[in-house]
Length: 187
Image (tube, rainbow, N blue to C red; front, side, top):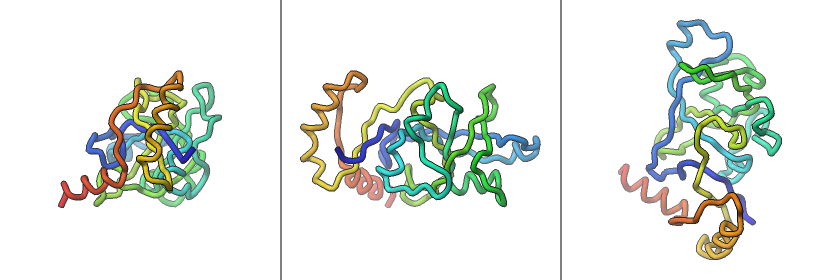
């Protein structure tokens, strides 16, 4: 099977996303007040490899990042740079501001991505799908393949239909067509 991952919003789909303000462990009140909003994504362990996004430091999520283990996150380079400009961010901790949430440990750093908009790379914080952080889960299945996407439709529908955890398959679009549509809207 080609690379696949679940997401809440398909890249460049125009479905928006979530932003959040985070606090790094040990920040002063004035530092917290200056923290920007970051893009938030809930992803599977296959997410980065499927999109061809390298893990620059640390590691990607794995099957061992589950609900009963230490809560972990992966940060984009600019998010890590904001909190720890001259330090190694691996092992540092952040938490969502204005909540009683617990701290999450940074396990990896990835480049900033153009997930919502082709023109602007945004700082992001990624959460492990199997460590529920939000009251919902991703419902879109994204697949990266070297064959024409239409050739996989029947196989994917069969696999999804036979999966006890899968939701019904809905519309399908090739990421190239989504990216092209998005760039035309922005032009």
